[in-house]
Length: 266
Image 1 (tube, rainbow, N blue to C red):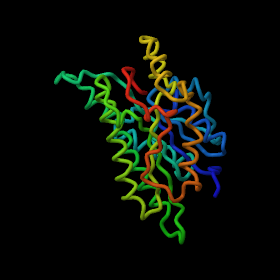
Image 2: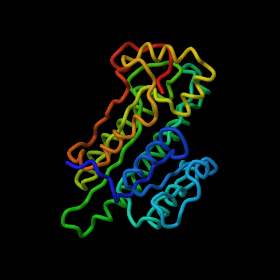
Image 3: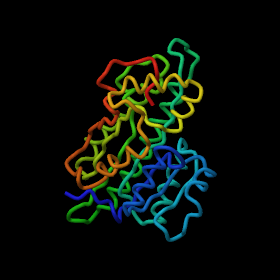
Image 4: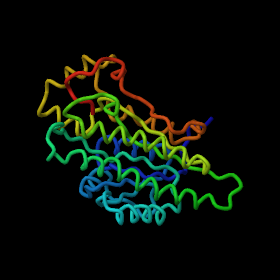
């Protein structure tokens, strides 16, 4: 079974930095057309340079929490590449929260940012994938990959909001997988442990002692680079995973196999 994604078109959210940027670049390197989407237009331009009108890499800047922005993102992708085959929901935010403060709005904020953005865009893209398949004897289907976290199943008081939003993404993945299976659209998630994302870099600046805690409680003894997630995403997007849907794939260096520790999992 082929792991090739050459010639396919992907939308990657959170594409201006960190994990999303690494995923988008990898998919492009493997021959896919990629629309990088992010709120930070300056970072997109800085990382990707001038986007050619006829090249395989384009970018779209806007607040993905807005429904109109999501519709415009999909339209821009279709205008550029005529179709969409892969969606990677990599836009995510990590904030700490006070679990006993009723005025702390972190839960609602992360549900809006991490869950609802991914859900709404998945719904729009899935409808487009279904439309693309109309009239074809063997519909090509599509692949949606959500980025989740092992925080979905590990209780850390300061990460109440992040854990809730991650668990919600896992359940969204399962529900959409069943809904879209008749249309040959597969939906899976990648749940990771500590990866040197931008959010973790910022956390380590303020809490340098977290690094040793993370490394000591990760069986493989280190924090992963963003580039170590990209092959798993390619697999989930490819025909190599053609019979795989509704799965939460864990990539965490073994961290979820040991007892939780005081430092957050990003």
